[in-house]
Structure formats: structure tokens, C-alpha cells
Image (cartoon, rainbow, N blue to C red; front, side):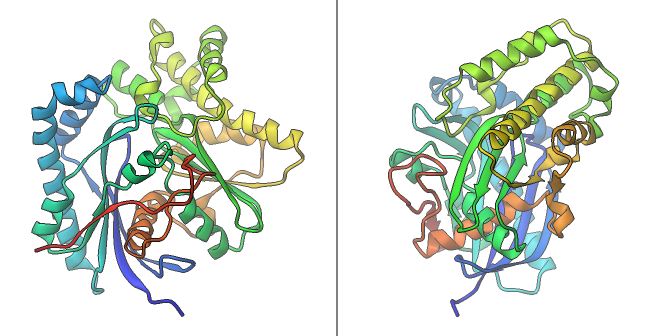
Length: 366
């Protein structure tokens, strides 16, 4: 039996509201056990700095233009993660071998081979006295990949752990991504388009709320078909071979002038339509996959109900005893161990890289 390690994964998604932290026990290959999951909410001051910074960075040149601001926010982010780690270390009785530190993405452009995550792995290792694995996406980008999605190899062991056959895992974060795992373990994955990023941006722009809880705002609005068709036409024009997106690839411009409720309803239907296209494709090829939802967007009951109008068998990952809020943080704990073992974390079928490759920089504290 392969040696097991205790690994702590830290993930902060495109909602920029906080850090998901997960401790798992894993051999980095085929086994894992969830030990502890905890969420750490960003203070309002950090949340505002992050969202303002992301809104400023529209192109790669902006990374240089706002470099001083980026450095300052990065230090704050790293210190926040360090505090989260120390709280986890006090809470758990196991000895953490590795920390998988994703960092906070502020810009991703697969075409230009740039993916910028805020987070200083060397500093984090020094102040926590732990081996830190970070910068997971760069090696994939250097080897012909798009840097995302990286969680599919973890979805593969989830499939085995949950005794599932053919399954598609949909992570509804800011970006919607899908991992399909076949009976034999074969993988295919890609980002599909906007998950919650447009809905969240609309709510933040038109109200004092951060997001549409349960989809209640959208539920009380009406879909504007003309506006919806404009959004859908953009999706249809995108290269189907593309593997990854950034939230900056999408905008709420077409919804300008609409009411809060109608805009929310229209944007929610837009995200739902990405699922509908998938179901139609499966039906065309007569493929039978279980559909399982992960990520924060699965809590949007209105969105999930629309999806279930097309496929009543759609399940939440929580239905299988896995907390859907922590799939990605568990995944990066798993990827940290794979990185240490020099095992592949990305594949031609997932990111478009030339061959299966490992990734992540490993920093041993001094």
C-alpha cells in the first residue's frame, strides 16, 4: 500500500469572498479521506481591494501598470492564508505534511500563457514552517496547456470513492467547468463559460448584495429573450476547442438598462443554457452520464431548478456525502501531494497540454 500524507488545501475562488481550507489524508494516487473542512471569510476591506483590483486588470499590461498595488494586496492575502493555516493547525491533531496553496486569481489569459494568482508561497512557507506547494498552473502553460481546469484528476478519484460509473462533475464557480469521467477512468474536461460571475457582478453592480441568495432575485424577474439571445450568440462564436476562461472574458454589458430582477433572471437563464447544450449533446450521442453539481452555484435553487427541467436526475455532490463547498480545496490538497511525488496533475484531455505533466513549485521552509 502506498504511503499516505496529510495535506492542507487552500482555495479562494472568483467570488473573492474568502478561503476554503481542507485537510485530507491521501496517497496522491487513488485514495483519499476528508479530515477537516473550514471556511475563512475575507474581511470587507480585503474583499473590496480584491474586487477593485480585478476590475482594473483588463489586459496583461495592467499587471505591470498596477504592480505596486498587486504586491501590497498579495502580502495581505498571504498573511490571511497564514492565519487560516495556523487556526487549522490548532484545530486538527494530525501533522500536516504539505500545504497546497492556490492563491487568488486576478488574471488568466490562456492565449498569452499568463495566469496570475496572488500569493507568496515562499513567504507563506517561512511564516508557517510548512512545505508549501503553489503556482500550480505555470508548468501546464509552458507545456502547451491552458492552465485550467486542474481539478479533473481529483474528480477521477471521487468517481471511484463514490462508486459511480460514467459521471460528469460540474463545478459552478465564477466559471462553469465540467469533468467527465468514463467507466474506465478516462477523463475529459473544459471550462464551459460563465458560472456565477455574471450573475454576481450584476447583483453587486445593481444592489448592495454580493450575490443572489437561492436565486430569489432572479426568480422574481422575467427573462429578456432578446438580451439572452445576444449572450448566447457570444457563446456560440467561441472556439469549441478552448479549454479555459477568465471572468474578464465575459461582461454584463448587454444587460445594461434592465431592472435588477430581470437582469438576474436573464443571466441565470444564460448559465442554465450551458447545461442544456450539454444535455442535448449527450442525447445526440446517446451517452448516459450522471450529472453532479459542485461549487457555490449549486446553492442557487432557482438555477438548479431550471437545470432540472431538462434533466430531473441532476444531483448535488452533497447527496453523496461530500460537502460541495470544499471539493476544490480538497482537490488542491490532493494536487500538492501529486506535485511532491512528481505525478501528473494536467493532461491533454483536461488542459490541452502536450502530454501528462506535473506542476506546482515546492517550497521547503528554512
